[in-house]
Length: 376
Ligand SMILES: [Mn+2]
Image 1 (tube, rainbow, N blue to C red):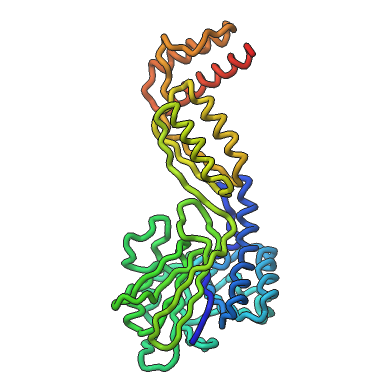
Image 2 (cartoon, protein in one colour):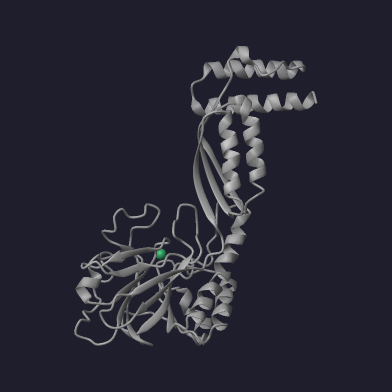
């Protein structure tokens, strides 16, 4: 029997670009969540941890980040870790794994060749990425193991072919043949590269292929991320037991919200009540909103931005309806504001370009806000 923890795609050194002030938080959490994997490994007294690629975001990752990871590995030196480099941290010239510091990590075994590796309870058959331009099935040289005793586990970093629909946010490169398990007779194929946890069956309907997904979600749109897998295989040919274990710390939500009229703002506030405590929130607004409600929307969103570690708003599909001339919200007392208002409305009447219209409408809203504040 063999029992191990499968993990992948730590992507340490990832910039977290586009996440604003949350960028540094996301970077640190990716490192500290490695503890959650190794703690689980210790709790379950697994035989080893199998890291299926992209531990680091790139080979030029800072030595500080490398040291932070190794500091954690050193705290769990009783747990053997087998690490397959991925496409981000590939072996070869300039590889991060050629740095001296890795030689001294007692429990870390970096997989550099396709040679089978005897591990406690099983034999690993790795398929390291040897060049970034590898074409065809990267598992094609994995040997047939049907005639051999013991439990055999394939390890690869790439995209499962024929896994349709392929998650559209995942890369489709470094292909892995759909028939790898059936062709070789391995008991299990541990995969990395995709950030969402996925499983696949062999030709007789037994789940023998799995992505653990990243241990800590990396962006909006990923699902089933922030996990590692506890995998148990009783004997050769046995059905693998695969149990996802939560390792991620940050919670993410991506939501599309339709705005129809002012009542939608009440619904929006009610929705925000349901996502209190979510760290990372991306909200795409679409539909129509009358100009006179724009200020309230802006105020709601401004406050909501203080409720989360990251709050991304997309409004390019939200149409702000300008009132017709006769329905001006109020009279401007200031003649300069009044003239500007008139001029902007004339410009608005003349253009059909949506981008220009948005600018004019938002300026009108701003003007109305200024005038209102001036009369307070
Ligand atoms: Mn990858």
